Amino acid sequence: MKNPNEEEDSKGKGNTKKILAIVIAVVVIGVAIAVGYHYLAPKPVKQQTLAVYPGPAGPVNSEHLLGGCVIAEANTSGLTSTDISAMNQFAAYMLSPEVQFTCEQATGFIPISTHNVTGSDVPSIYSSTATVTITYFTSISPSDYTTTQKLISNFEKLYPHIKISATDELATDIISDVEADIHAGSTTPIVVSIDNLDVGVLAYGHYKGASYLLNMSDYKQVMPKYVIPSVTNLTNTEFSIFGAIPFVTQIINTPLVWIDMTALNSIGITHEPQNYTALYNDAKTLYTKYGRGMINFQGHGGASTPTELYQWFVQFGGNPVVFNDTHDIQAMYYIYNLSKYFTPEYKTSYWATYKGLAANKYSMMDYQWPGSVDLKTIGMNTSLVSGTNSVLNVSIKAISEGVFIRDPVPWISEWQILMDNAWTSLITSGSSQNYTTIAHTLGAENSAMYNYLLSNDNYTVAHDYEIGMYKPITA
Image (cartoon, rainbow, N blue to C red):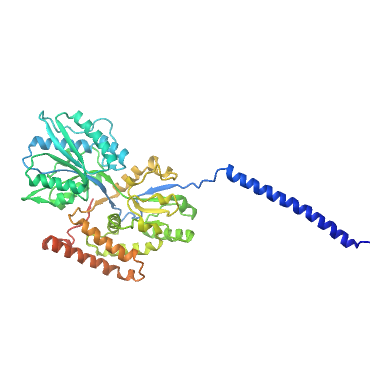
């Protein structure tokens, strides 16, 4: 006779086997269903929302750097009033809202006009029946130049007595061509559209006591009716630098801050940082969540890094041209502290860098030019950069807060090299002692710039540099 306990145990073992078999079957079926679902159902898509705003400078130092092109007229020999009238007519056409907003759609550069006026808004300047041929130099991308060619063709239909001979070439070649024509005594009317930094060689240049560029002191004659006030103020400020108006702002670009708002919202941040303290705190919070820096910076070297530093120094109230203004040093202290929270990608980031936002490599791109950002390919929800909060409107808001351009000194390339040296030494070298040497390093670059000017220009230029005569042109 079996022990009752053994019988119960035997029954229990049998039930356990059956239950185990059922469980295994369920698990196998569940795995099969899961595998099938993996192939049948689409993967969930993480929605990221892109936002853009003028930046964290705050209301005290809200000046925004202007990039883009200026339009100028060469001071070639023997120009007649008819020639100058024709050049002004072409300049007025290129500055008109209809042309500018056409360019904005094609290039992303911001019009200087606040109104997209329909129909003709070009002032009538040229009334002669004499035919004038203008040589026009511009320096833009081949795709953008296609738009320019169409605009020129339209101009020649509107003004049959003005012919435009256009060339798209490097800014350095434009400078060489203008200089060569002036030195050769050419009588050809020449109009140039050139980067507002590259124009410096021509704006500061003289030949036999005459300026390379005509004085466009009557610039209001060629400007559209509705111009962003800060742009008008900026043009007026030129006179204090050059004693003339050697160029007029044509198309503009200003770097903005681009943000993955989904990332910020996920850690309880609902607004873009409106001052440097908020930016620093947000950077720390993002670092805590992701375990690495999530702020990007154009820090790969070359011209883009000094350009970004120029904006930061000015917004801290400094004069980046001299390197070691008190506020320049303060700005570099702040950037040094913030660099602890930079994404690793900052060492390779430059003017065309922004797609890491969609790839979660960083949550904030501080700063980037709108003309470089292709919203169609960024792969994020761009609802916050469209409609009334469009990139164009945000840019105009920034420009309305205050603008400046870098003084287009002929030696800006050397300045960029020296500022890049400071950046490499203080930020990318990784030395733990850099913080204590910031003031010394910037002072050394100031001395290097002074000695360069002393050797390559003259004592007057070097002295004027040292006392701060060269500085951002602000409005």
